[in-house]
Amino acid sequence: MSTLILLLVTGVGLGGLYFLVASGLSLIYGLMGVLNFAHGSFLTLGAFAGLAAAGAVGAGTWGGLLLGLLVGALTGAAAAALTELGLIRPLYNRHIEQVLVTVGLSLATVALFEGIWGPNPRNITGNAWLSDTTELLGARIPNTAFLNILAAALVLGGIVAFLRYTRYGLIIRAGVENRSMVTALGIDVRKAFTLVFAVGGAAAGLGGVLAAQSLNYVSPHMGASLLIFAFIVTVIGGMGSLTGAAVASVVVAVLQQLANSYLNNSGDLIVVLLLALVLLVRPSGLMGRTA
Amino acid sequence: MSEHSPRLDRPQEAGPVLSVRGLSARIAGQQVVHDVSFDVAATGVTALLGRNGVGKTSTLKAVMGLIERSGEVVLDGARVDAERTERIVCRGVGYVPEDREVFAGLTVAENLRLAERVGDHGTSPARKRLVADLFPDLTQRAQQRAGTLSGGQQQMVSLARALLNENRILLVDEPTKGLAPRIVSEVADALAAAARTVPILLVEQNLQVIDRLADRVVVIDAGRVVHTGPARELLDDQAMIQRFLGVHAENEPAHGEPVPGAAAHGKGAHDQVREAATIAEGGE
Image (tube, rainbow over all chains, first blue to last red):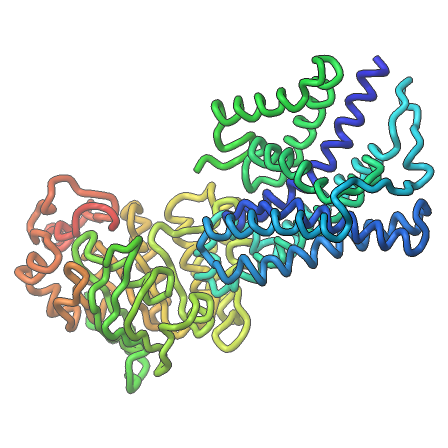
């Protein structure tokens, strides 16, 4: 019983990390039709920048952690906004070229990060409480799981509120439905593109710092490995659906944890099989619109 | 139908509000508009007519910059053909697309709020009142998702989005397509009211609606302009209607069954001829 609870809670925590990456992917695809392969790089950069900032005020302290999360998010947002302005916008409406440029950027940035920080993972000095566990119904849950769940819930709530209550949120929701009609109402939809990239990049950068806390290391490759699952989550949830991404994040991560524990470490296999099943039965995803 | 006086109560302004010169357009590499030139007068309704698939909708989209185009588009004396769609709109062009294109997942209020613009040709309190007066239904349904509205109500949303702003011109594409006869006349009422304050370039298949609203006509065939002139001259000449629009001005439409948009029910015998002369078939 306690093992099951442990797996469920850590699964939801891992789902929180997936969601932080997948939310941006889903929003960007929904509005712009671009699969952003560079999204993992925003995460990695956010993690390195956030941890450097945390180290500057005291690695392992609460102040350091909070500053790290903030700097990670801001770095992710800035990197994403610059990517949109510099690489995506000049290729306006040329979706294949836009996707290819993000593939190139992801490969180039990983090489760049390896050049700067070395190819091997670096251990980090974690916050003492985060390295500890809390007992819940007999299970000893790593505290990082709670932090991940909290952060993902706040980001989900924040993005939903942004989409529902702001003018740009309205423009983004309308643009996901029918981009050309938004321009035909006199709205420069390109500003919304930059904004969506920045919001997605912020969530990814935040996810990078949190992932480093959970893994206890940073590495130039951490973005790429999370990105794969975030893509799977985005497809299963339905491209462009934020709620779909949230639900699929939890489903995928919990399933992965359970399979890893009870079925000979077959978590990754089970997730890919789930992806295949969803694509066969419901190609538009759990909450995707039927195109 | 009386003469055009209700719509021409303002003095005729000097030049056209919109001039199109040598406009060509492509969709997916295929040329759909060939060297089209016409003017839209600064008052009243100019109808853009032609058989199905001749490029009327594409012409409007090309003017809006929604499809790849070449040629001159002059709005209020300024070239706008190099500008992006949203810039053209902000110069005071209201666009009511074919098939309404309301945002189905957004509420009616959100659809309207999205359409509000700032600036010289933007939204004003007077315009909001006008829209509220014209479409009281929309106020009642403000919190309803636009996707759950009937076709006629969606058309009202689409028209309201354009009428909220102080536009210099409206481009309205097949506003009565697929609507029940009663709704067709409501839409025509709204357009007639709008035409008193803003010139309209109207694409329309329903000859009765054209008869009611249009002052002038521009006829397109195979992507080229083949006739321009007063609306009455065309409507009174059955041979011309047959030649340009491909319809028989008799009791039956040219191609069998009446179609959505063809308002040909419950009218007096003397109206039958004109009503039957509704251009058959759906969109382009």
